Length: 218
Image (cartoon, rainbow, N blue to C red):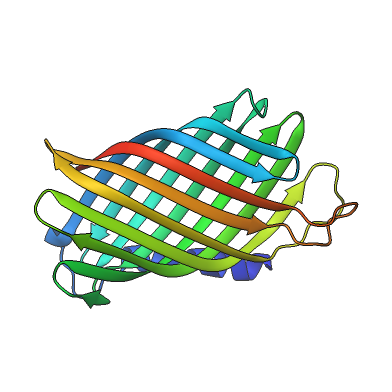
């Protein structure tokens, strides 16, 4: 993806975060969540699960909900670490059926991994849907999927890396407890590096993240 196109798409996400129709200042709310879990990585020659910590900050203005999410995973199984940063925005009034709300969502992400002296990096942009169903004032569930493309991939030791079709799916459960919500979730991503990597029949990066955390409205 060309730098201009990438910058334009990221700017679009930020722009959505700052505009929300006829929303007023009183419609602005904030959420913060901290989770611990495991981050699984599957790629050519790498099959590992590492402990991880995720911090998520969210702002909702009218119908627009935006998140900044940072994850750090580290483990001896890869003799290294992985960081993932995400910026996402969704419009929460696209389909409101009372208990069920379905929202279009746009996500930009960046993954960096260091393992045994090898650097693996990729970015991705996905568009999809986020659905949430509230059973009562205690229990709710959510699920989402996204389709898009990885871009700007690089791997130490390979001269050529190509981007490709990427996809993501997630699901979770929220239980109201105390001043916030306990959250259990799983998130899967498939990020290809293409079939034109020198000396390889193709490299793909798959991640599976399991999290248990707590979310509070500020």
